[in-house]
Amino acid sequence: MAKYRMVRTDFWKNPVVSEEMTPEDKYFYLYLLTNPHSTQIGIYKITKKQMAFDLGYSIETVHSLMERFIEHHKLIRYNPETRELAIKNWGKENLQKGGKPVMDCIFSELKEVEDHSLIKYVLESIPKQEIRSLYESFCTQEEIIPGTEYIEQDENEPYPTESKEFDDTFVHRTTIRGQKEKENEKEKQQQKSALKPYIENNPGIVRIPNTDDVKEIIEFWDANGFGFSNLNGKQQLLAWLDDSSFFQPKEMILKAMNIACANNKRTLSYIVGILKNWENESLLTVEEIDAHAVEQKPVWKNRQSTDSLPA
Image (cartoon, rainbow, N blue to C red; front, top):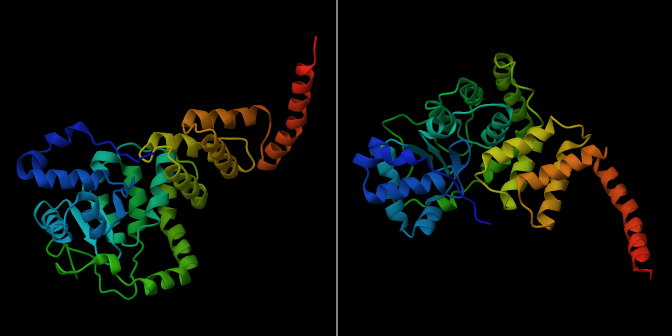
């Protein structure tokens, strides 16, 4: 099943779009907003080679379009070392509603951003304070990427360290990944410290759950055709991590999703129906579900045998 994203109809009423963009600009901007690499936070990894392949353009054409959007329209920023792209007005158009499930999704994806200056860039257009606070908590973490010369961008130098001939697909990043792995624990502690002011200033929001659990569920959802852009569905499903009686909520959710895939019923209502049935039957762990399934099999076989007897 293909991934998709929705664009608001007032996209076409934006004066920048309607008066300043060429038809090619509009096509490129729609691609940046809706391509399969896009995320809920307005920051995602993508290469110019991938853009060229998707759009049917040459890399030189894509480079020219990106320069135009960075320097003329001032609507995006791009880090050629981390290969991360940020959309300036994403927050204004897509981050107007808060609530715990939304915050969980945002937190999970912000964790993956390497260039935190891009988080600050997107933050400027976010209208809702609770979401701004979460973005700000990551902006307090100053991260220097080893082995690169990339420095936080300013408005006069939005596209650093790259010439038109530069192909960002083959940037050597072994040193970066190795350093990341070594500093993994340190990074987690920095994130906890950075999030402390956010949690203290937002007591109405329930505790942030295990972010690895959130990430695993979202990744399974996106990878198995439940609807990449169905943010509302993800939010409702993630609520089961805290608002259920299961002893192993993440494992139970993933098991229900696997059953939905096996039966080709990739909908939120089908998953929730399974979870509710388990709660009603007081099956609160994966082990209990498996044991219950084993117990039911002979009962079903006996029933079949009885039904087959002549009257």
